[in-house]
Image (cartoon, rainbow, N blue to C red; front, top):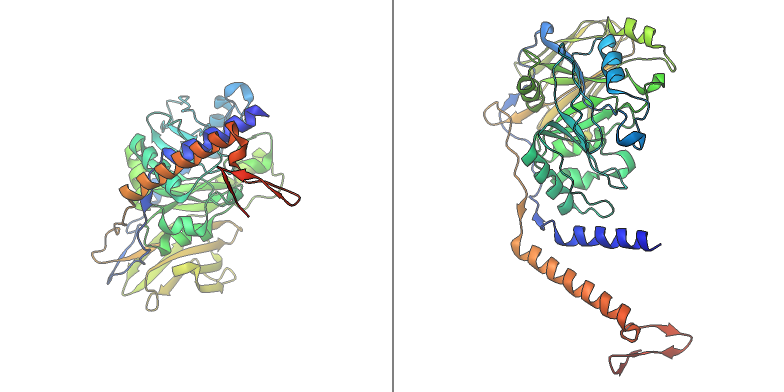
Amino acid sequence: MWIVGTAVAVSLVLWWFIPPVYNFSEPTAFHGNQWYNPYSTIDTNHLRLSNFQIQSKSYGGVTNGRNNSSERVFSTYKNLGYDVITISDYMKINTYSEDSLPHVPVYEHGYGAFKNHQVCIGASEVMWLDFPLFQSQSSKQFVLNELKKKNKCVAIAHPSLRDAYSVEDMKVLRGYDLIEALSNFKNSLELWDAALSSGNPVFLIADDDAHNLDKPNDYGRVATVILSANTAEDSLLSALKKGSAYGLVVQTPEGDSHEAKAKRFKKLPQMLAHTVANDSVHLQFSDSIRELKAVGQDGKVLLDLALNNQSSSYTFALADVSHFVRFEVKMKDGSKIYTNPIIRSDDGKIPVAFQAGVDIWASQFYRLLGVLVIGFSILSVRNPNVMVRRTGVRWTRVLGTRVR
């Protein structure tokens, strides 16, 4: 029992004294007379099928991924036709790679009880600091800021899982690049829309987050398609941070065999065009469309249309779109493509979001309060008479006075 008590006490001290208190800016929607379009040009020869969340066996099999050797992960995904394969072990940069595929160092940060995790892409070293039990908005912001110093690209992982992040969190947190809006475990589209609606230009990644390749439903279902001229690490990460990628959820029957998956992956639907002209967006795909949904500010559905495979293209008018719009497109084979948003801006470039600043005085006051609370707690343990307790109708004496 003392181990649990010690762990809680240490977590509380870390949470109280290490992160500063931040001033979070009031959320401000995107605005401007021009549009930033992350898909201004699409070259289908440069579509890179990618996945940034796969667990392998590590720490002697203690973590969830015990059936996945590094060799097996690469072999399985390479056979499906993936161009970028990464292994996101917990708190460990996996150095396994193949000469024929790009090596992008990745790890999953976080060991909190409520799955407050981040995917660190282009990682240089593991940051061991985390707040396992207690996380406020300020401690979450502190973790993101510290991770950004050691990684080229930081993504918030599966934010909806175990309610790790709230809508209110996503409205104010800054300093990260991507959000795992689509995952085999849980989608987080509502939280992504909250971040976008607050004027934070963060783009998606979509991952299997595979933990057991023995399970057919664990892999080959969710992917990120990156529009990158080559597979060099810097080119891939630059495309991700500019939003030149889209999420793909592959229509896969339950229990589908690996052979059936591999065959299906040879003919995945592709986005061929996403152009903005004359205040409208023109979309074109390699296969016909069954359903098309447009989503805007505060997650409002601007369009929800059934096309019944009548066309492989659609033009959407932007006259009533004030801030941003993204699309969810269900294709003929049942697969779905999720686009990054086009965003209102003053100059046609990615808007710059206001960053959270440290409130020095509030930070000092909060730490002083922590010292007082801990001091009082220690005093209370050493001298129980300083605690106010009531037994029946008897009142205890506190510091020489009677309280009622």
